[in-house]
Figure (cartoon, rainbow, N blue to C red):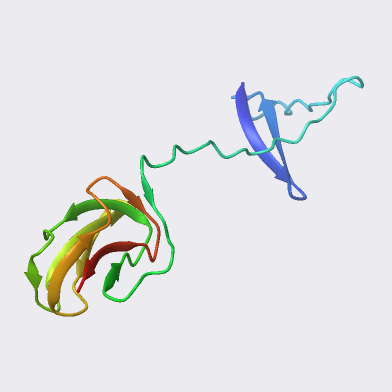
Amino acid sequence: MKKLRVTVEGKTYEVIVEVVEDSSSPAPVFRPPASAAIVPVVSVPSPTPAPAAQASSGSTGPGDVPSPLAGKVVSIDVAIGASVEEGAQVATVEAMKMNTYIYAPKSGKVSAIHVAAGDGVEEGAALLTIG
């Protein structure tokens, strides 16, 4: 006996079939009893746990370095008060098991850090501010 999932006209059904080894005998035909109801299988997504902390995706201000994608902050590679050059790596964000490196869009001094390693961030959320 095998349990199979069959889709007919867009509806999915789970059926149990008997595997017959002897190809010379005709395959049995499954006829449900008159009292049996065929129930479509509905796929329900499993709930996913929310990240521990989620930085808001609110508008960023002048000098803010936004996250280019939603993900988890792996590291903040600068400290408050540090001078950074344009193009210097300032943070790393992970999404789908791939690291994305975040670079300073301009030269300046880091005036604020809005997230910490391990925080979840949305696309566009401010990671830090360069003044």
